[in-house]
Length: 376
Image (cartoon, rainbow, N blue to C red; front, side, top):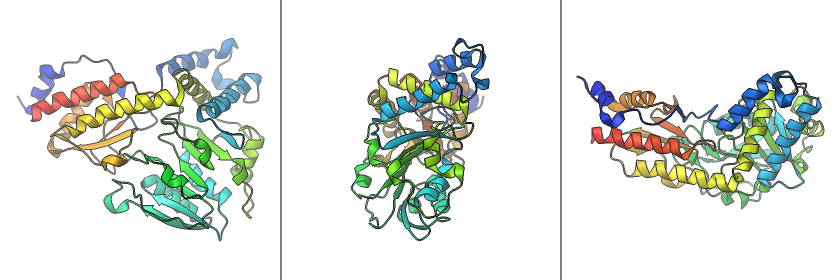
């Protein structure tokens, strides 16, 4: 009997937990309540006899959906009257070029932080529209930490930051570091939006692909201070100008109706669960459980500087690479989905977005500890 067979037959690993437990980085876990209501709406939306998939985007039926999606997000984020909420086509990658197109003139300067693959891609796109200065980078250590000591040119029209890094597992914990620069602030919050309390009004523009904490893939959320718009000299394509989308209430053309509906349901769920305040408490508890397991282990090893660890995406390896495959097979057997790390980093990645229940993280850490007993 080989080691793998012994592990699978061990009483330590008898299947006692429900599943699947979805730790995928995105598209990611959504609340069960959202699935249940959305599945009914696909057949009969609000007793209209129509599917949400065939409802016209300018009908009263959908107007109520997008109005709630906008108003609930404004309420959760406590936005002031200067900030507008948009639901747009495309993922966050579209915003890599739409942001500088709207904010950065050809001879003007924008400052960017380079702390992951997504920041690097945003920098590449911004250079198509104006001057870009990389003010901070952690590329030298494979993005395993976040640089804190950096200077921003005061003439910068904005400072761009990626608040959480899904691939490398880092997250800016102290955002006052950026607020204190007194430069208009732009943030890619795709993977940690609504996961913790902050003053969202301090950002001039926030964008986020919905498929982590807000809803399903296919829609991009943009929160923009309308006072920062209309200052570039270039002519903008109609669909790329944020002002046009604001004027049309995100209905400039046919929006991704179903994806926005899922956002509305998820935001409603978050509000009913106590909003961001309670979400942060739950997220802190989940992250503490997982990181405590890593820190007390002789088998697993975290790859991120402790002060920069993400509450959303925990990244780690196993000290002995020869047993990584065995651990992944065990996770698969026990219905732990999405545990494998990104192809550029290897190892393992555990994503713990708002909808991830504490019980799933507990099931995973129990499995990790039991597996470690066989390797000690």
